[in-house]
Length: 184
Image (cartoon, one colour):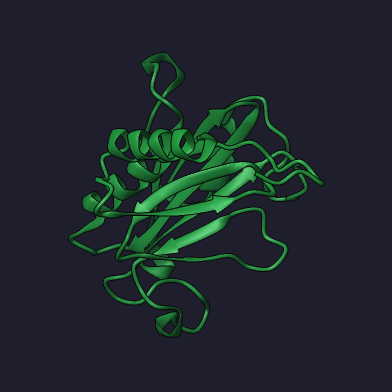
């Protein structure tokens, strides 16, 4: 019964995120207590010891040297905080300050402001690498989910990739952490 309820909730979250169940795959991280939906044509990659997941529209063997994105490629990184053990992203009290820190030194082309009432979001260009990055934050149940999209600067699909980023962010759901010694 519990599994049916969780499956129904997951299906509703996928639909609310803009992905239909037929188009969505599910990623679950039981240790960090969350799940999310992503386009089923994309794939996930979790680096050992990493706090999150990378979701990309290209196979791992197409990752160019330097680990960015191949032509036509896009990747969405999802990092989960706490714990705040990443020296590049210290514990923060203001999402806008964190994203400004991340974008510093790059050409910012779009940004939300606190007065807008919108979630913190920044879009910037890394000209020397030919990349476009979009960063946003979602808070849920005491956790901060830092999401970023990376694609080529001149990719005509950049706006559709941003929709994927937004759908992934909207689909994030907290799940109960497993209780040691108890099985369903």
